Length: 318
Image (cartoon, rainbow, N blue to C red):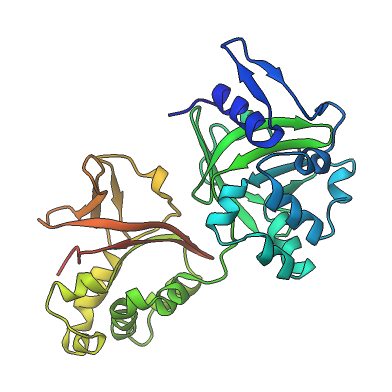
């Protein structure tokens, strides 16, 4: 894994367009950027891999703000990250100033210049960003993650703050866990199972709406099909208590991202079952202890307003 001393040099390459020669880290700066006196706006405008984020700043009308006193901490998605998220120049041009502002400010901490040293040792640290939404930061001596997105390089110090480079973009969650499930066509069996497992009165749907934070290892449609169910309506014949059992056996009462889970680790679910994780193979797997079947984890780190959603391809208990 790349260390932060190397990451800082990579950030210089990504943002400044500099060249490194030899182990002595001699730097040639063809754009003559003086980082002690140059503002964040100036550095981004003259970068080689920051064109799209800098364009979003202009679209938001924030270029003068980032020329101001600050201080700011800005997590900068590279052009590759922006393109992979589908945010190219034409998309930015068609985005309203308020939408661009929300995007940029969700990547910005106002009033502080937070270097990597202040982020190392954190565990899902909640930080309120400049747009009012929160991110969750975890860091150790080798890596930092924000909302599950890796920070690929750190600590380019500007006159009015500090910049870090991101592998992806940050998107504030807009749906709770139940809304994520109901909106996802690959979870239509689970959506019906949650409704069928809900007694009156009941806390299950309430918890998925406003409880938590939770991490939910959600069985996808294939998990149900493997048990012979051909449509969500086939679950109408299943005992609601059985449905409730497997749902609560997949629900952990804490916010976790994939990097929080290590090989051979265990997690306690809300119904006091124990999940065991095997990360040594080609696919990450999870098993309910005392049960024989392992499930592959097929997607990770989908943020909800009240937790994080993973998808698995097996029912862990039935």
